[in-house]
Image 1: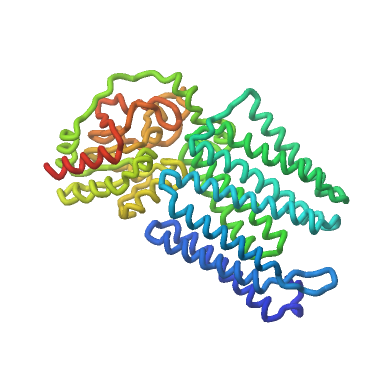
Image 2: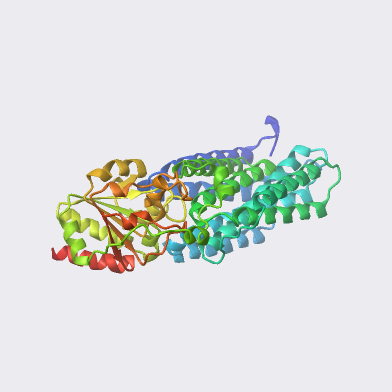
Amino acid sequence: MPTTLAAFDLLDIILWLSYIIGSVTFIFGLKMLSNPETARRGNLVAAAGMTLAIFTTIFLYRTQEEDGSRQHLHNYVWIFSGIIIGSIVGWYAALKVKMTAMPQMVSLFNGMGGACAAIISIIEYQSHYNPEAWNLTAVTMAGMLIGSVSFAGSMIAFGKLNGNIGDKVFPGQTYINMGLLLITVAVGVYITLTPVQNMMLLGIMAAMCLLYGVLFVLPIGGADMPVVISLLNSFTGVAAACGGFIYHNQIMLTGGILVGSAGTILTILMCRAMNRSLLNVIIGNFGGGAKAAAGAKEKGTVKEISLSDAAVLLSYSKKVMVVPGYGLAVAQAQHTVHELEKILEEKGVEMKYAIHPVAGRMPGHMNVLLAEADVSYDKLLEMEDANNEFPTTDVVIVVGANDVVNPAAKTDPASPIYGMPILDVENAQNVIVMKRSMNPGYAGIENELFYSPKTRMLFGDAKATLQKLVSEVKAN
C-alpha cells in the first residue's frame, strides 16, 4: 500500500473505502449475532462485507516492487479456482452437517483458518525475508506459532468431539507442555534476531508448534471442550490479525482482532460460568471420564415415571421448565420439544427453557438448536434468571443434560465439578429426567439429582419419548 498522501490514486481510495465498509459490516454483523432473531441477518451482513473486501483486494490491490513500480495481483485462474472449490466444499458441508456434528464442523473450519495463517507466515518468511525488518519477522513467527497451535489443537478437538480420540494423560504432561512451549518461543525469538534466513530451523519450529497443539488439547476432558473451542477460535483470530500486519491489510487485521477479542471474551465468560480459571481448564484435565466414573457411588434409589403419569403432571402444572442438553441434539428432538411447548400453552401452562452457558459441545449450542425449531428467544432463560424461577416451577424436564444439573457441584468437595455454577433444578416441585440410561454425562461422574426424592426418570430416546409424551398430553 502507498505510504504517502501523494502516492494515493482512485484505486487506492476505492480499496480503502471497501475495507472500511467491510470492517463496519463485521462489527454490525457481530453485534447482530448476539440475538437469535437477528443472527441470520448479521451473518449475511458480515459475509457481504467479506465478499466486498475479497473482490476489491483481488482486482484493486497492488504490490510494491523493488524497482518502485506497483503491480496488480495475477494468477487469477489459481485464485478463483481456490475460491470456487472452497466455496463449494464449505457450502455442501454446511448444508449436510447435522446439528449434533456442528461442534466438530466449527473445530474443523477453525483449524483450517489457523492452518492458512501458519502457511501465510511460512511463505512470507521464505519469499520476503528482510534481516533489517526484525519486527515484521517477529509478527511472522507469532502468526506461525499461534496458527499452527490452533490448527493442530482444533484437529484434536474435532477427533474428541467426533469420538475418535479419547483423553490422553501421562505423568508430567503439564511440565512437558510448558517446556515445549518455552523452547518453541525461544526458537522463534532466535529466528527473529538472527540476520540469516534459516528455513530448516523454521521447519523445526513449525513441527514443534504442531506437536504442542496436539499435546495442549489432548489431555483436556470432554466437559471443558466448549471452553477449548472458544479459546482455539480466539487463537485463529489472533493469527489472522498477524497476517493483516504482514500484508498491511486493514480488513484482515480488523477481522482477526474482532475474532480474537470476541473469542477471548467468550472464553473468559465461560470460565466464569464454570467457576474455574482458564489455567485450571488448560491443566486441570476436567472431565477425565473413566477415572471420575470409577470413583462414583450410588446415592440412593432411582424412581421411574410412566408416560401417562408424566403427561398428567405436565397438563395440570402452571409452569414448566425444560433444560436441554447434548442428548436433545443427538436425538434431534428440538422440534418435538417445541411441539410440546405449544400444546402445553394451549392448556394454559407456561413453558420456558433454562440454558446453561456450557451445555452442549460448543458455546451457544443449545440456543442455536432451539432457534432452529423456532423457539421464541424470550423463552430462553440464562442460568441466573432460570435459577430464580425454579422455586416457582411445578415441573422441570431435563432432556439429555447431565453435568449442568448435578448437585455434586455444590455438595461434594471431592467432585471434579465442585464449585461449577449449575442449574438448580432440584428447587422445583418435580423433576423429570429424560435419558437413554443411567450412564454418566460427559464429565464422567455420577449425578446426585437422579436419586433425589423429587426426581423421576423417563428412560428412552429423547425424540421418541417426547413424541409419545406429546400424544399423551393431547389425550389429557
